Image (tube, rainbow, N blue to C red; front, side, top):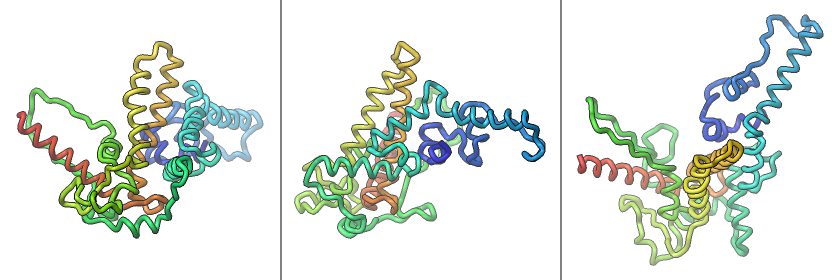
Length: 293
């Protein structure tokens, strides 16, 4: 459990960053997630009586158990469900980061198709080339998200527009995958989603990443989120919420692995194109909003 709660994607997407920035201890995680803490201790263990030791250890054991069983075994069900989605055994899942889960999921799909070779990371980088933009944020490899400064003032009739899973939606919509971005087909080289970038995308077939990320995104948005809201029983509502939380972990991390050097299917142009298209969509939306007043 300790290793599972330490996985950053679980902390951010499954538990909403409840214990972000804290020391990862049984006390802080239990307090943040289930609202319970360890027993306080005002003297060394060697000076505690047997009764005090029993109570102190019992609370620790209870917290460990309750973290796995609260809310109808939420954590255990999350682990099993993500293990099934990623094709990763539970004992491996809790000891690895989400990039390994996504790698296993994509490798499985390669093998299942028969005749698909799994490329080496170095071969992908050699074939696809490097990025074409410069990062604004120090330590990044290419231009990332755009941040718009709000205009000061008081505004009536304000509307909220939210992009549901923007990067995964971009990956699905523009068919972004390591094998479709800058593919060898000469006739597709004019198909550049962003004219300023030298990256083209082949649309003569569906990219594996775009297919899987799009499927998981649509399952969450159009099936399980709706089921979680409409379920009649608390048991079913809890189950559907677990499913949509597990899917959220995968789809929100799917873009990040494309631009992570540790990822075995690392493809810098694919990651760069994703952020560029997101900037394009956001900028166009702002211009349209201004046009509409």
